[in-house]
Length: 305
Image (tube, rainbow, N blue to C red; front, side, top):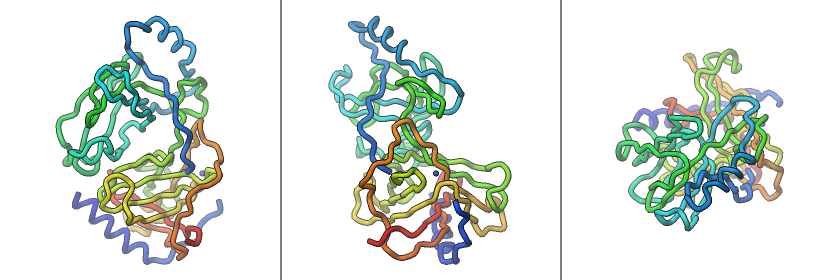
């Protein structure tokens, strides 16, 4: 949107200010393929599936967050599997499955045994003005048309540090919190979430992906301006330190922000993380487009190219 682009311009100008001192001080190895549990409604194995699922259901020790389990199929009977993934509720994902739309988002509207999930497709980022067509409501556990020519079976997975069971969500997530006061004091006025397994996400000017360092403390971001599928030649790479508060150098709210990592069940320190950066020192502050009207990202020096 024009408003979001204006904020991105302000952010680039803000990068020219010298960074303030960073306090001392936790998003990227690509995880092994997930094997999520799906509610597959097929009459032949209905009894066996219900019995097995009752043994594998996660025990929700503490109510935290619910993610969406998606198993993609190539056929309308959901026999030929194409892909599987765990997605954030209301995350804005690049649509790599169709050419008519640039992004899609899923939103849980009914929880419980028979969940309902709204699917929205967009012609750019996930702003209501970019909606391609009216939302469609999908039923959990049923084989239904998804995006492009793919079909999917959807289900819910709990994400919590205390969740137990194979049905728990395995993904790690980076939270970006904005505060009305300097020093990240008080209650956050806005919180945004980004998956950090290298998923291709949509933003106003292209696509981006987030990953974790091997120790889970640094979040790497790669932006692909003007590219729809996170594979463009032009790339902008950044590092953000988890748990570090940064100033927005603003006289109005919000005045500061920080990134914080929530490590998932599948996280493990893996060698071979990609080397990001250009060797030049990057400023510790920037603003970018987002659903808040702005998204702030702290850019730290990357390893020498």
